[in-house]
Amino acid sequence: MSDTSPTRLLLVDDERSLREPLADYLVRQGFAVTQAGTAAEARSRLAENGPEGLFDLVLLDIMMPGEDGLSLCRHLIETRSLPVIFITARGESTDRIVGLEIGADDYVVKPFDPRELVARIRSVLRRSARGAPPADDNDLYVFENWRLDPLKRRLLDPEGAVVAISSAEFRLLMAFLEHPRQVLDRDRLLDMVQGREAHLFDRAIDNQISRLRRKIEADSRNPEIIQTVWGGGYMLAADVTRQSTATA
Image 1 (tube, one colour):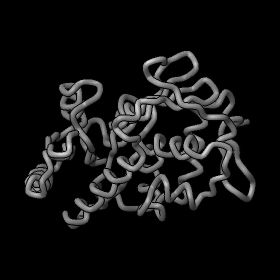
Image 2 (image 1 turned 30 degrees about the vertical axis):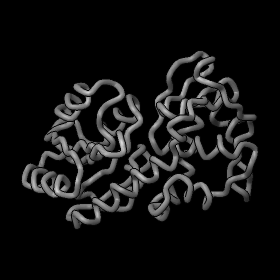
Image 3 (image 1 turned 180 degrees about the vertical axis):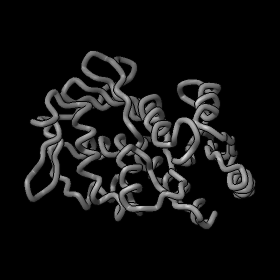
Image 4 (image 1 turned 90 degrees about the horizontal axis):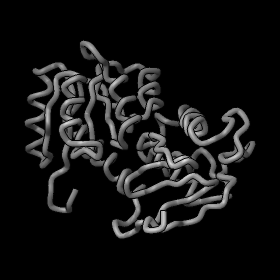
């Protein structure tokens, strides 16, 4: 997305009476909005834009006929690194934590003030931008034969296969890669990864680390790369180097 082009949102909600007025409001706030009434329609809109996609963020209802929002969110995590905000009537704290653990970046409960939603969209986009490298930085992060391309947000295993990670997992891994062999306590990780929504995420950060371990550790039950420091937090117990994409 260029500095002058509008932020591109994919709004997925089967409730037309909410979706269309919300889309109109977001357009008036300067966003470009594409609507989808079902998960299947959302998949079609995403497929039309290719694997890299033309969207900057997805607003996603959970309760929809057919495939629900949780399933679609998992698909997004598996296929592309794209921020997701759930917009749903399910407001119980357990529902919020499940949504965040799956990989969503935020969770807004209906009915909501559209101005609050806009503020949360901008907050998520700021966090995503803060976790991204400068545009002219093409170096890969290399650790234990794993490679992370921060521009494409693509994680490659030692054999060169792509391992899908959510945008929240990307920010978590970046936090470790930028502070190798340093103990990072939960409060610092929460601030670096979740920002203003840390109060919702404090019970889920351990689960996010467990998810990341399952992807990069040979044995996630006996982790060697991301180690627990009892009473202190977590540490990336690996050396990190930078490799130019020209030689990768």
